[in-house]
Image (cartoon, rainbow, N blue to C red):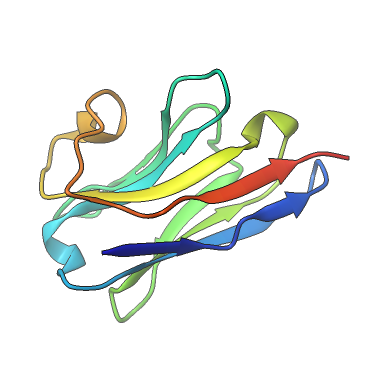
Length: 124
């Protein structure tokens, strides 16, 4: 399973770090990353690691502001979010899929595991 945490209320320009702890499966065999869903908008793949070579993907909307990383124990994935904007407001989910298909985080969103979601609100 995946357990996400770290959301909250932050002012525009602020920062947050989301965490996603994986248990019961080995991250090395999965693509893992973050998907967000804002009210009235389609879900969007935000950032991810490709299965195997760990190539990173970032949505154009977050490039240069968000960074995905993972810890040395290979059980936790982070999303460092800087220079947050009101349009980043959404529920953020971590998700994992046993595939090298990059489209899983851009089009398909077919995951074996979903975290429970954590709310990020950017507002003054």
